[in-house]
Image (tube, rainbow, N blue to C red; front, top):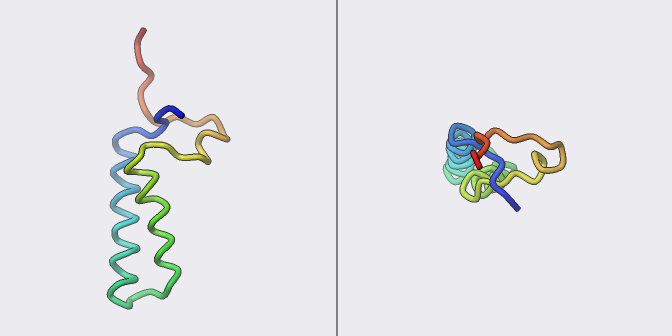
Length: 64
């Protein structure tokens, strides 16, 4: 699989993931906050399976 997330997209996903997990650990939100693992992993790896299915790319195209 190729990277399909741009730098800004990846950064925002990691931040949102960390915030959700942090809120869960501090008992501000319930167990559903663990869903933050999904954007955290997607941002760290740079691949979004939903983007792949929909044909979306937020990263710049490489020049050949």
